[in-house]
Length: 164
Length: 205
Image (cartoon, rainbow over all chains, first blue to last red; front, side):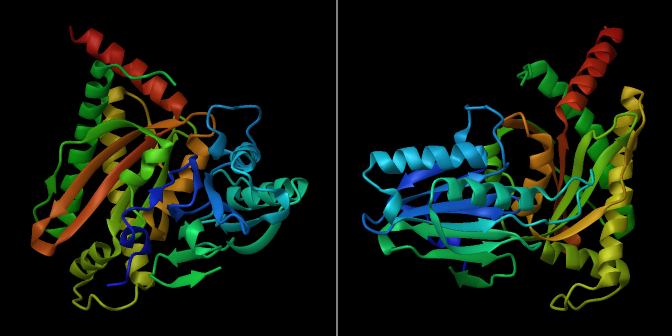
């Protein structure tokens, strides 16, 4: 049996679809498909946040900030800045954005649109991307613990693990 | 989203029960084994809690879009742990090796099993409601269940934060096979189904 990272740390905060969390505790998002796990980390203070982003644009909706790329980055930045983080020491890593299968509707891959949107908003905030495991057609489970530095662990369905 | 009344949840559960029973019967015939089926649950699930219902374990998912009289009606999914899927195709294809890699023959067998089951599921529910519901050609995904479902949610839950999640568990002890039959209706479809069920119930009072 492969070691299941997400469940090997039962204390990890589970960040479901459209959710986000800021802090120093271990956090995880399981089964990222077309969604993206965006992790922002402050290298100076050793705190960070993760959002499980599902769609590229909120279109003005404010009820679930973690769900959309624009509002997720906004809310993570707001909460991290409130904890004393600064743009200069914040870095970003991205995981997910796969196209698991060809859409029934024939729409453009939602995963790719998520990636594009997040990269654009990060650029607007002048946040540097220092790691990514994105695209393709495989699901990913991501774990991150700010207290251990900016190490993001990614596990695939077949059990293969990597760090970015 | 309109919150469902307990009566509506019951009605949907009963509708799903009829559909799932038919699906279970076809599976039992294909495997020539007995299938146990749990009473279907109908739950309103927040997107953030989907992980409590679908894991990131390696699974085989056969995915169908509900089509026919209702366009883009939502999705029906037959989900199995990959090990169960292998035992299922082994049983059908007369093989015993469970450690082998999944091949094209397995894939078409899984698509076909899914197709027969989901067609039976939709036929039975559609007949009760008096409308035509057809499954799209199947799409097979071998990966994390949660990851595959996310892409469907991106279509059905663009404007809502909760989805109606229909779930039945099918178990065949004889061959140690288990799977889940899931349905994720599009919100407009759901509204239409509920309306039809209301009429159906009224006409029987």
